[in-house]
Amino acid sequence: FPYTTLFRSDTDMEVPIALLVGLGLRRGEVLVLRWQDVDLEKGKVCIRRNMVKVGKEIIFKDPKTDTSNREVKLPFTLLKLLQVERKRYLTNKLKMGEQFEDNGLVVCWDDGKCINPDTLSQKFRRLIERIGLKHIRLHDLRHTNATLMLEYGVNIKAAQQRLGHASISTTMSI
Image (cartoon, rainbow, N blue to C red; front, top):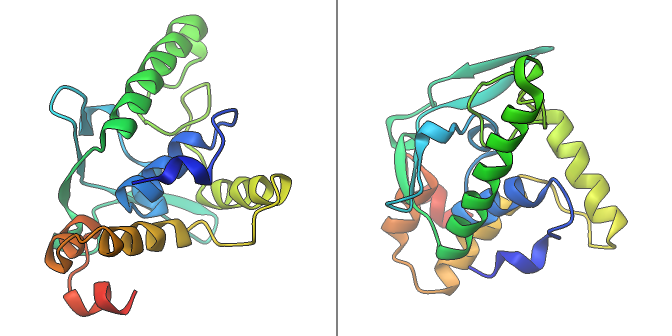
């Protein structure tokens, strides 16, 4: 998918945006994706958890439906990006030593701590304003993935499974 035109590589938003557009993940799925869920050799990602904000509390939980638990193949460009990001993660861990909070998260602050979902949305909003793009919500990147799959001729059932929708009607309405 040509997601690389939607973000800039000189920002810490590159990886989360690539995961949202390239795989169609939910914001909470991106923020709790762990390196143990990413198989860089086989080029796939297992989605097993979600992050939700309840009031001021951030909760890691199982996805809301069985179909949200899924395995997604990585496009080549995203696989290469994650390989670079893995090296950056390990470098930060080594440099920071005991100050590094090793949660194993793919998308995290440089010190390993998890990112608040609202903070990610705000960072995205500021990024698109700064580079002059039309306002869209962070979640709209997931919808972009769905649209791109259909434009590229991906079977609707395969798109449903990739997005983790319980119902094909949900995929069709997007």
